[in-house]
Amino acid sequence: GDGSAEPGEPGEARIRGPLPSGKAHPTVLLDDGDAVGSLQVVASPGHSPGHVAFLDPRDGTLFAGDAFATLGGITTAAKPAWPFPLMALLAWHRPTALTSAHRLRALDPERLAVGHGRTVDQPAAALDRAIAKAASRTG
Image 1 (tube, rainbow, N blue to C red):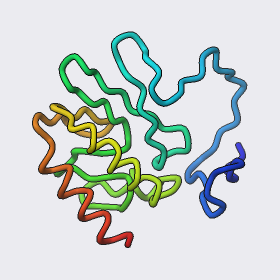
Image 2: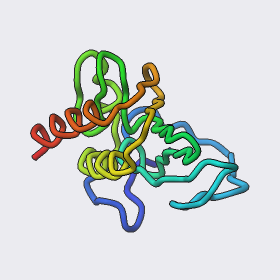
Image 3: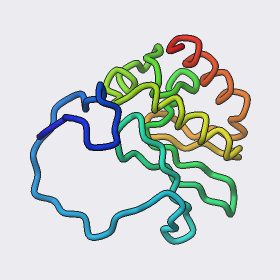
Image 4: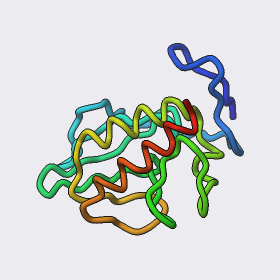
C-alpha cells in the first residue's frame, strides 16, 4: 500500500494507481540475466519498479510485458500515446522506462509480445520509431 521510493530509486518516482496491501511473499526472486526455463530475465523497470521482460533466445521472442504496447502501433511506457495512453500515464518512472525501452530494443528481437496488444513480427523499425518519439517528448 506504500508507493514511496525505495533506496536507490529516483526520489521523485512514485507508484501510480491503486496500491492494495497484500500478504503475498515471493518464494523466488529473479535478477537480470537469470533463466526461467528457456527464458532469459531482462530487467526493464519504468512501468513499475521491478518490471521484467523475458527473452526466448531460441526464436528471439521478447515478452515485454508493459514496457511496450502494440495497440494502434508500438508505443513505450515512457510517454502517453494514443490510442492507449493508460500504460504510460500509470508508469512509475518515465525516464527509466525510456532507458529500459532502449535496452530491450538492443536485444534486437525477432518478435515482440506485450501485455496490451497483438504480437508483432520483425518489430525493429517500429521499436525505433516508438523510442525516438518517446525520447523527443521526454527530452
